[in-house]
Length: 435
Ligand code: SF4
Image (cartoon, rainbow, N blue to C red; front, side):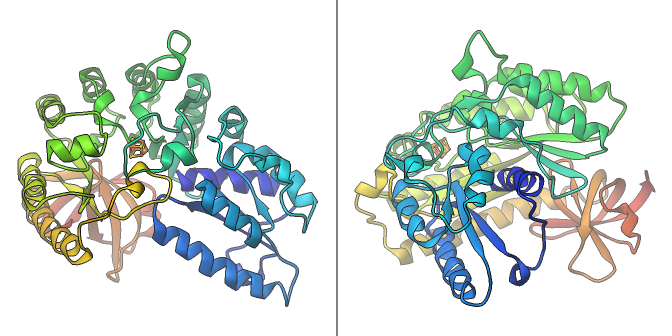
């Protein structure tokens, strides 16, 4: 989300304040951060960065701001450190705050810091035309906030309740991107597949939105892939999967967070879905889109997680054969319900579980990648590879790929690769044709 948010912030600053963009932090007269309170590490980085910037203020004129997904507690602390603190839904007020250079955000904006964020102004935020940071890959917000209240997560308290962006705006933004030749478009939201639930009867549903994107995309004569992140298993219907299977432009990669492979842990996490429901979704994906890759998110060492419960999570790695899993060691977040519970899994145990599960993932992913060798895949070239003389690319299923080429004009374009070798988390290929 932060990438998409920052593209809109940049547009507002450049078009309404007269400031010009620089890649050089040291020469800037205004510096800002879009933060995320969801992880403590991210917040720690904010503190070290603002301390450095505040020292620079002795040497030059410098205005600092912060916004993003911020808990009320963090927000109060940041008010003392940054010149401007604003919620993303208040982006339209940023130019006025900047014009009051040196004046801390008016207290009236934060009269009740502990109240749930209000989402009315998010509609204004969505209308801002973003300054896309890539010429071929873009992120399009379709929904903001979350009504699920997982016990480990603070997002419902930082982003507020679910609000769907008008579908007309989403379809216009995508049509514009496709017209400009964008090749990879990701629909963004905390719960993309509960799209429309807050506007029942007034707005289309998530599968209907995907269908309209697929219909327009496949008839556009352009080649591109559309993804979405993140969906919630509770709202993942067969209809969504069926629509993805039907349209060429809908990317055959599904990121479906599971968080734990143990029923009791899922209940304590308040995930509101069972393993059986999750299993049914995976079976439907495999049946309707056999070529789809499946990614997930998993937390190890959640409060009260026993060895046996962790072993159940290891089993699902083998059962679902994930192509990628983002594994996190549980840490308490102030504001989340579980922060009031004892964090009783020792750090060393969390680390051990993390390494065990990462090795399971490595084994499963390596086998998936080996099965790609000898086959031809269409890939989107994304940039230079770390290995000299090579370019990096992603398959439609977002498997990291590289191939030997000095032709930098290929970046941002599709090529066909024959996969010649594989590693645990990537594959290598050679070019078959060029578009
Ligand atoms: S679904 Fe759960 S993890 Fe995802 S944003 Fe909502 S509360 Fe957080």
